[in-house]
Structure formats: C-alpha cells, structure tokens
Image (cartoon, rainbow, N blue to C red; front, side, top):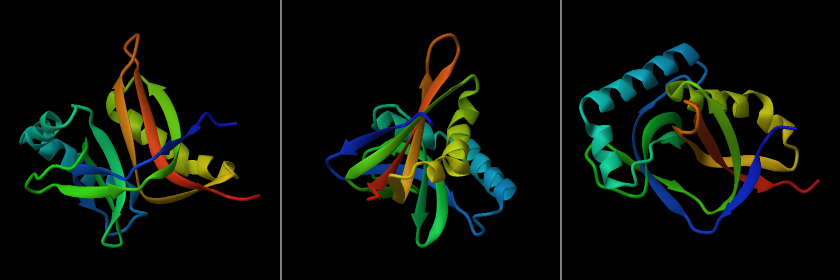
Length: 159
C-alpha cells in the first residue's frame, strides 16, 4: 500500500505565488517548459526571494485551478500583496499527505506529483481528491537527500 497519511486542517488558509496558466493540460512537455521558465524568471529577478523573505522561507510548488484553467506556480504560505503574484485559497478539511525523498531537490516535487496523479489517487479507495489545489514543499534532509510532502484536500468516501 502506498505511503501516505490523512491530516485535518481546521481553518482555511492562503498561499501567495507566481505562476503560469496552461492552455492544454495534457501538453506535458510544453507545460514543464513554461513552468521551468517561470521558475527561472522569478529566481533571476529576485521576486521569489522577496516572497520567501515575507513568509517563513519555505517554498512551495502549487497546482491550482485559476479561472477554470490549470495553473502551476511557486510561492509561500500566507497572504501577501506582491505585484504579479496571486493569492490562492486553500480550504479547511482533510488533506492527503504524501511524502517522498530524493537526491535532486529541483525534481522531487515533480516526482511526488507524478506518483500521486500517476496512479496513487486511484489506489486510495476511501478518499477522493476535491481540490481546488495542492501544494508540495521540499527541504534538505540528511545525507544530501531531500524530503518533500504533497498536500491535497480530500473527502472521505463512504464505502
């Protein structure tokens, strides 16, 4: 059985992020390129560093639905007024928490996301993903490894 836990968040919360909208959700290569370009842009121009300094310094990769379209970005926990950034609402409720480890910090969030949406959600019969978004963080662990977690809001399915 896959490694995951269910955690309950008692209050709605917000995340502030810079990101890109996908016109075609199934254009995996194009979307990966758009996401990488956005990450490079906000890293090079210092916008991500400014956002991280306003919050607790923990960066999140965020998948969300904005105006009915798939959106991916990079941001922080909390609500901040930053030009060009969006504030996203995350709702209270049960969250599926999926951990992962790896040697490549930049790829770990995508690896966890791939594991979750590549079949793990279908294997979990007693919970259903309800969104409207999800987030993944990655941080340094021991021995040069990295640790990450993806958080997705779910509802219990009566079986």
